[in-house]
Length: 595
Ligand SMILES: Cc1cc2nc3c(=O)[nH]c(=O)nc-3n(C[C@H](O)[C@H](O)[C@H](O)COP(=O)(O)OP(=O)(O)OC[C@H]3O[C@@H](n4cnc5c(N)ncnc54)[C@H](O)[C@@H]3O)c2cc1C
Image (cartoon, rainbow, N blue to C red; front, side, top):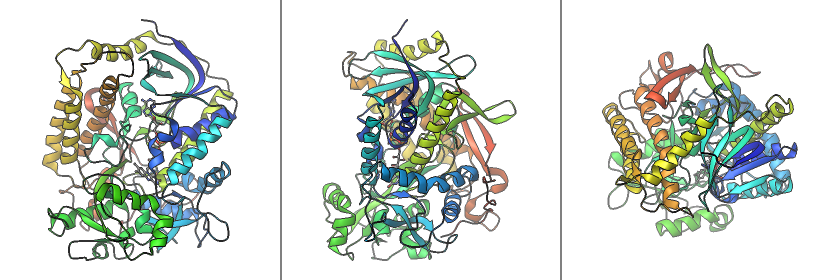
């Protein structure tokens, strides 16, 4: 079947922070650039980011990119690639100042410089004490950031396709990427976006879990499309559970609350983090705080009638400070917990928040896959940035405020690399392979013709429950093994989902069914990769890999200091070494992670 074709120099899928930053680079270079997005750009999940963006500006006290790099390597539990981490931390000041020049309304110090607050795991002088590194616009940093970058894109004539859903990645026989098929959500029409460069910036996939801080649109479409097209997914066993989701609702309470002085308390009012992280206390890194909270709850020191949450207390802060620095949080507390945090502490539990893994890239934003002896062979025409990508700077655990930084640095880097590649003129529009188009259309046809199949909502819920129970904050061998079988069973249901409404116009049922195809790829990758990794590291903590002198924190560097690569075809796993060598400085050597 023939479908309409639209030609662009570059197609970017996703209009969150990463997509918008990449688009600025391409449009400013005069390239014809299309940005596809399921929602209006400023409604992308980046809009929900609260706490800030990390950069060692040192506006309130001494700071240095090398300290930031050290914290990030340590935070990653040494699974992050040190070349990419050095690249990101060194670039931070440049991209934050650039953003300021785009009109980002950062909070200010009295001397006019950008306001910075402390954040978990960010320390001065190679792990000494918390440092003010997070540049913030109150508790609405992502909101301010998206608007500043959207405006910039309007200025440089980026062409937006709003409410268009990309369906599949199109690759030819040589493995080169030639663009995507996409559906106009309003009319149901399917079009081929034929491009010389394709950049994925589709964000996270937190919706594979039942309780998540992520937006409903965070369904891992980029990962699903890549996996179906034969690209492996990297390190997906590593998911960050944010310590402070509102109990029962999952809505995020930023770590900035603890940065401003908030304290976690158990049922006896004890500041329990003093026992788990004597130095950093409530500002230890997220995996450490989440596990401490779950331990308190499991050992019977939780709060409330079911003893199933802990309290986040800021009642000791001045009401004026709360109103100035955390107005959105007060609002969330009142709306979702019925608690005014000026007067009473907020009920909180760890909630799925962020995927450390994703589509494998290098620090130039190019997608890389193993090919023959080359473990990092560049896929021609394909780039990725932001949460859907794995550069890998976050390794086994991401530090707060390092994601917004990742969007800016690698969004820009992917854009720059694509511009350079296109300006070399080597890549023209290659002929479109008809079989790839047919495969993409077959998925939609199957849905249009399926009779007496499974219900999308029920299957999604099954998947989310399996993930939550079998692959949560703490992991157990038997639960993981069972989880693999269960998720493969769920997959069978996904293959035969049925939608009752088969109409064309604004068919949200069809869109949700297509999203579920992507979610299940991410869920499988997560469960299979987690079951296979027989150590504890960062956010992946197994009951059967405890902290011993031979294996600090349960880590097994001898066997597991390596990245996982999961292939959808055959549910196959492969591994590649971690890049321990930075670009210019010395390697940050392995040691036990303690805060
Ligand atoms: C509540 C919350 C608070 C956070 N706070 C912070 C913070 O303070 N600091 C920090 O550093 N990090 C924070 N994070 C993490 C950070 O915000 C995210 O990792 C980051 O914003 C992701 O940006 P992105 O550009 O990769 O994707 P997103 O902003 O999620 O954008 C994804 C884009 O892809 C589009 N898209 C997806 N699939 C398709 C498809 N099939 N077709 C077309 N378009 C598609 C969407 O429409 C959207 O435009 C927070 C996350 C959450 C959930």
